[in-house]
Image (cartoon, rainbow, N blue to C red; front, side, top):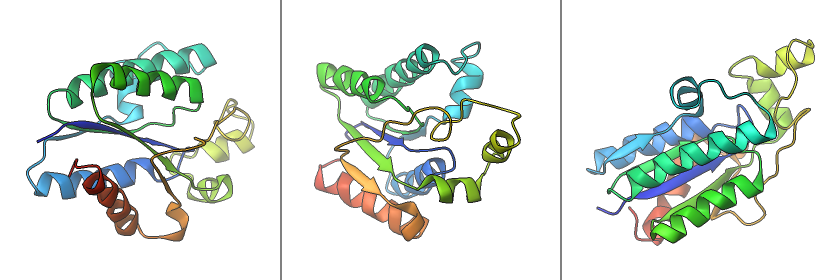
Length: 177
């Protein structure tokens, strides 16, 4: 089966990881080899020591992109629910995949910041509002939304299953499911 990187970008608490795990279950059920490269786990193990400056965020995204491409080039569907706030960092990952001839899809989980702050899965929005942290993507640090992603999902207007079905339909359309 063909490998591919499916990068899910969006704000914190947009639903990226939930969507990735929902899609992973469906793909595994069909016999696909799948890995979810969760941003928090990557930061703990692969990018330990990096902070949240623009340069460190770029380095983190490039490391994740390298691992995703390595997996995808070996027949794995690499689902990457990682914010990746800067367009140039995401474009560098896309170009790496193109150079290697590896399929790459960019999916924008386009949940408005107001909805994300209500979900606040990790309590980051509350901490930022209380002045305990700064540099929260989409609040007091930039998030450059993709201008033309392969798919834009508005997770706040549909169920997780509907979002996963839309992404699965794209994979099917591209010959990757």
